[in-house]
View: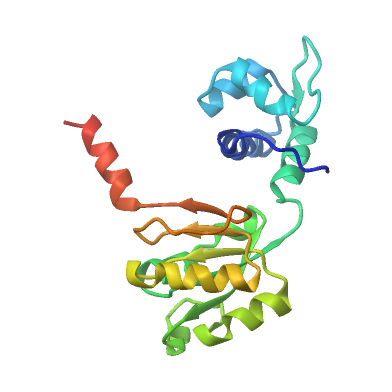
Length: 206
């Protein structure tokens, strides 16, 4: 499918729509109205239709969307319909927890290798993914054709790691380090700062 230049917030919502569609498929639901899908995703139906319109016309008036067909289309857009290789850098407490998480593969992603300054972490209980020395990262990325990386290193090392990843050819970074990393315009970074998210929640529970 031709890549369409759409807002990042719309891409984020596509992932939410996909989760809703997957639940519908698990419950043997064949069709869903825009109103019902939008409600399940927590958005307005006008927003849902606008997001989907970037990729063509979907649904039949009075019948709604074919759940399986729409899920396949969104999967193509998000790159889920083929297993996407991902590497992880930093195998501390958070990194090792991510390595143990079994849900990535279900969503079309596979952590194929991890990298750390201490590769002896490979003996971590429950971790099946190989852990290599950080010095092997660039060669591995080039040879395996990996385009996505998860960064879970301390703040002091995050920018250096990001620079190495960009130089190796990584195009997308999921950053768990608590700093803003700088990358070229052709590289996309999504940052997850757990402390900030908790602070945001705390405002609403006072």
